[in-house]
Image (cartoon, rainbow, N blue to C red):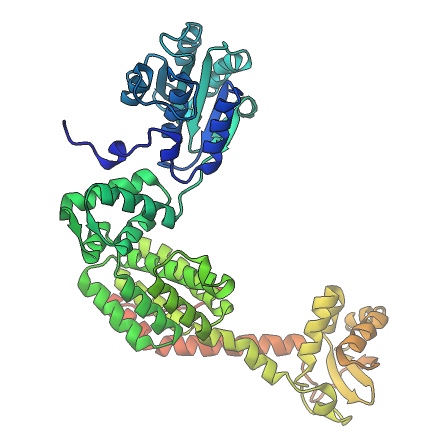
Length: 516
């Protein structure tokens, strides 16, 4: 007998052989047992999760000579003809190749004829969403009044493209992508039958690459066996699948968390020397950050990884926080897109590492502002005449903006002239309309102040003195933003990586903008 690929050799032939679709299997078995067969079924789900296989098993169970039964005998003429694809009563139609209205009209004529050997005629239409609108319209009449001996099974990866008139006449089953443990268990069973020597960790890599598809996982296993024979090492599996060394990924992730840019750049050099695609490596690193986020928020049980990796994730989760991990994820996700378009992937990847290693500094900005603005208003002024901007005034204005945005927008234009003894004197520019607008909202402002300062505060609204006028909260914020931008620009322009980039490209950076 000629060689059969694993995806065909281990295609399930009974309900018990279907992996990961317990809901659909149980419902169909009950429908057969209780004689509650519907005339049309819609199987939705990603590629390779068992839609067509389950449709064949369903047809076999209904038409088996010893049935209808949830456990077809597999030995009768009907079962064997369905297994080999030679049954005249189970017709598989490719929706992508038979999209026209004439194809459906021909089908409508054929459904009138009784089955030859079985009890029902099954029409399994794969990728049914590829039918044209006119073809769906032609099919609608048959679905409304189907012959009693006909059962339709539609399979699709894109159910949203199917008209609602068709959907409403079908029983819908949504097939799930298989989890990594489910795929590993299935692959391990097949590896045992084929006498393959492949570790669970290697099977886990295959399962991760399969993206929830049984067929894809078996195709990858087939490829590995063709290359390695019956024994495949972990390194060989990584090489065949084009995956980066997970140990290297974990080491780089740890270097980033610890802001050790020298180690991270050294590992980037190693990635380059190994010939690993930087985009693929960055995607692997993105997955690691994603796992670490899940562990940080939901615990170690939230990820499917080896025990060794889980231990590392648990340790790293204690060394950082969710806010920083979210920043790392955003930087890396954008970096993956940049790598896909760049002709200088190593340069781009190293800059990504620099951003990620420096991300800890981004988290310190609110803390720095809090420290600058942290003293209480009474302590800052002690009831004396205003000598400069109060450290806590911008904080109070921010609170007003959060509570009452309209009042806060006005208050931003006011400058505190004197603070003390339960009184805050505010000044506005001469002829400013904001003074009158704030006077109309003074009661609201005093309510917010009572909540903020935990004591009654009155406001006196006047005009700024012409000399030595204090700055407003708006001016304070604008000055802080300008200072921050200048510092970022100065650091960026003098950074070795930026200077190296300019040398490599033979160009000069004209402008640097902060990406928010």
